[in-house]
Image (cartoon, rainbow, N blue to C red):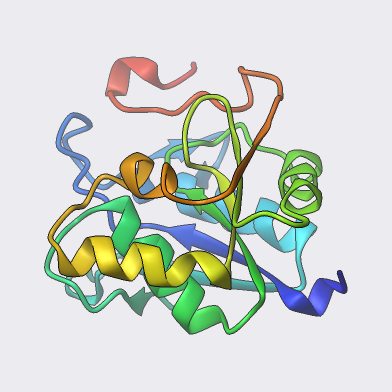
Length: 178
């Protein structure tokens, strides 16, 4: 698949309830989580879009496309990313996984050949989502079923094994590395 058929999608619209402030703005080694994730996506793919809530007015150095939904759920961001990107395949990254690498994101994209979703054993994000997944995701959102992992159960999925340390997410301030 040509790189032009792949887009990177960064999700920055989470509620951050356990974290206490927007995770996108948390800092690690001189970068915000959002800047770090955006940089890694840009290393991996020619096109990167950022999806979140415009009302959050996050002070980020790139445009945040509003996901168009009142609910804060990963499924909403993934569906919006698939719609906005216009690519056959979107590699979707949540802002709270600061250890991901471009190499792993390429691995996800490659593993999505012939399936709707390629995701690690730890769950549906990060993940490579084909446009073919959009109707199932939108159907779940319309039914007010916001669990991304449940929607993914209805799709053709390939599990990608990787370094679990890369897949570690940061949910609380205590999870932040020093």
